Amino acid sequence: MDLDKKPGIVFIGAGNLATNLAVALFNSYYQILQVYSRSEKSAMELAAKVKSSYTTEISKIVSDGDIYFISVPDKAIQGIADSLNIKRGIVVHTSGSTDIQILSRFKANGYGVFYPFQTFSKSRIIPFNDIPICLNADCDKTYSQLNRIALMISNKVARLDSQTLTWLHLAGVFVNNFTNHLLVVSKQISQEKNFDFELLKPLVEETVKKAFEGNPQAAQTGPAVRFDQNTINLHIEKLKEYSPELAEIYKALTLSIQSLSNKN
Amino acid sequence: MDLDKKPGIVFIGAGNLATNLAVALFNSYYQILQVYSRSEKSAMELAAKVKSSYTTEISKIVSDGDIYFISVPDKAIQGIADSLNIKRGIVVHTSGSTDIQILSRFKANGYGVFYPFQTFSKSRIIPFNDIPICLNADCDKTYSQLNRIALMISNKVARLDSQTLTWLHLAGVFVNNFTNHLLVVSKQISQEKNFDFELLKPLVEETVKKAFEGNPQAAQTGPAVRFDQNTINLHIEKLKEYSPELAEIYKALTLSIQSLSNKN
Image (tube, rainbow over all chains, first blue to last red; front, side, top):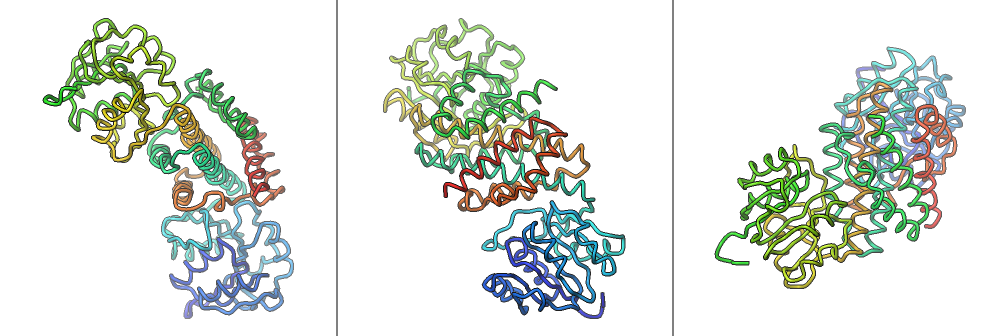
């Protein structure tokens, strides 16, 4: 990287994560050279936010960027890696569940994983300061360059290998996707059974607070951990009428809570 | 109730909920006359916190309280209701999953449900202001007396019938017990796979924030809603080795997310 000028970044992808990350980099120190997306609308919208040019053709991606962020759906990464034709610049992807070696073509440039561990929406640009950025790199030199960039936008940077990243991503599915789904079904229940979803908010917030302040296992309460079979049966009966899938979720989670409690 | 003197409250039970509720009532306006618990240690500890007397014998519970809070495990409520021998005073229980009619013996006094919708620990006394208190009562007169008490400690009071309370409690199991369990297993994974559990905190907090600010279903991300079968298979394979129960939870929640997404 030429340290006399602002490093120039190319974004391949203009989705939720790309949008939040590009805006954070743009707002810190970096120049966004170009945004690529198959969707002209997405490319144009992100380009406007970060004052860059844009393209919808892979062959027109500029070849002299300092860093290329591949931030596309997991299954599209390989295709981009195969067709990206550049002279220089580190190439990273932003996926927590894709191996770093998918980018091994770029050995001469340096390659890595730059994985901001958060859930993003295009319509909700959130500050990056507290978002952990998980890095993996082909070598120490690339790592130190990625680390410098990550520290410009976040104060939580961790270096993790591919295996650990996969487990982190899996834990993310549990605490984000699955927790969100529990909130989705609770919201539906509240609407159909006529109580205010907001009633649940202090309980959820306290649950999360407790889990990170202490020992969430010791904090477990409720019918499962009490082995309160009357209440469990009542709940399963009600859920079966309401939604058999939810009854299955209830059973699986109850068994898992009880099995953990038996082990300890 | 005699409005010239502070209403006197009797607590039957000295567990997590009873402790937090008794302290909140004591700190607001009320006099705690007596604490009953089968465990002398629990009774004595709570009595010390709220400057009351205590007993471990049901027959020695004072008979002229203004309100009796039965805050014991669900399956013990019936026994208490049967053996409680009092002259006057409204009788309420604090359980979200027990019908109000379990207290119908106290028709002459007035009876009800006084259910603070939160997760409590004895060791963590939390402010009541924002904790929703859900009320059910045998009649409007009792309701208005319970409502007055609830509003002394909280600014969120809702009147809900038995059926609705049951569904609220069930939603509470989803967002508290089950979410907490997802956090428990994620913490275990983080410890065994060597990453910092704290990495998950901003993600969980954002998940909860988003769910109450907007539409959690529209905010759903991850392999399930993307129908990303490669990642789903990879995760299930890894989980099967790690814990077959977790693999079952993963499958049940993934199917439920996908089924909801198909319906919309």
